[in-house]
Length: 348
Length: 246
Image (tube, rainbow over all chains, first blue to last red; front, side, top):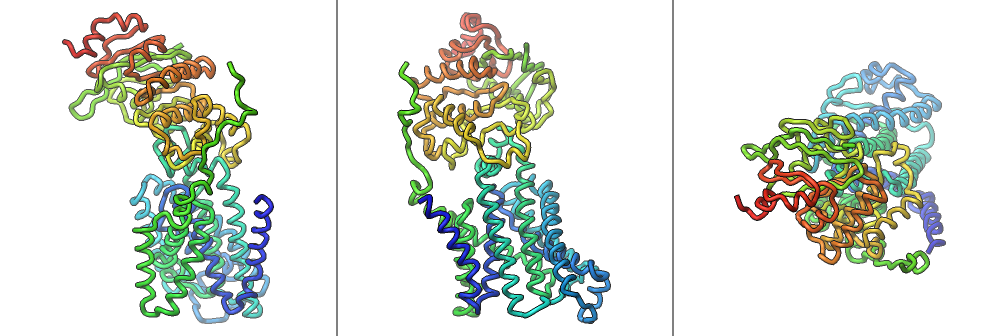
């Protein structure tokens, strides 16, 4: 078994690298799948591991998108003039400006989103359960409305970014690998993080926050750090999505509360919250179901998706991994283990 | 040396006076008992000390510093820990996980929290689980354990946290009588070997008379008597309070 693990991960990595060539017609779809996977994994950090169900993580996605775009533009032009001349088309970006802007933009998108989460957490983590969920949802909606009234960043019209400097198909591959790399790094990071004392502490907050406080855990600090790390990755993904979309606007693309904002929650519930693999499996399942209903049940796709959400929430809350843990607890290490004779205490 | 000094503390819930002008001292390194009939205000006093609710008047000092205005987490981080009358553990995790989470985070920086548990942590967790007799069940979901076993686990978690003072709210309630002797033994060892000061609410007279150096008795929210176990046992007011004679 111990040998199988690296083999499994290597095969998986090979599949990730080869996927856009195995399915050349689905490159954009595969890139979108990575967005779902990353958002699900980051949502699960607070929702699954820490017990704080945020309905507003899309705020960091939108924030990342705008921050990355503004940084890229600001490196070459005056942002206000650029957004004002919407469609004027006299603004050219060199290849260096494009990639330098994107690189710096993504760094800022991640860091500033994390800072926003840290500050918001200070206020919102005073609330628990449904109050936290509604509070975060409100914050995300408010952010979308604020940005759509902010003329300096293009108001309701949004921002048009330069297109990828190079071949269109190479651009598709570029974005796929950018998302995939972010996702793989996030996976490796979480696999490590969930083995630390820190993860134990946020699990304790999920299971009984009062007990955790009584045991002297720095509950607020841990909650803020978790959300900030989560927002860091969401901000980066939002930033990449901005460049991939080329043009985006505040309410439907950046701060899309009712689409992506809810989808990431459903993905996690479907796959099983509070597990490393659950959000990934859930995201894949959800994406497939979503695309199938879009293709074969056109006109009814929202009804089908709504039904899926209702069924998951009412009947299948633990998700696939949760169900497995219930049916096969021994797979998850639950067992009676007697003391081995070697370390048994000598008879008194 | 006095480690906890409760001076003239009052607490009422609406019209009900749960504690009236209570003064109690807990000696460092000793075992202090708190007894009294049901509803006499014992748990209220515990909650006041650990910061679960604000007190109406009086002062509470821990190691000489006023703590009556501090919130729960800050008091816990000073090393003043309590267990709950209704046992509280993390039911979905196994015993070892429960133990590892109980490592003293107050002594950790964020950097230290972002490391994996060491071999020594695991060994300490298993040693303490062995200490309370839960070694074999350490990989079982703690929520599936019996109430008595959960109490033992909560006690082990408290020891894992390396507190200076441990406030125990009825540690033997719900525990099988044959296990009680073992628990008394372990509490005494926790006090003598680990040097943890104990402050214990207990209904079982045999248990508390066996362990405590000094006992306080509450009745109707007021301090009725204080003294050594012998003095308390011989105090007619205490006997009357328990038997309901007035």
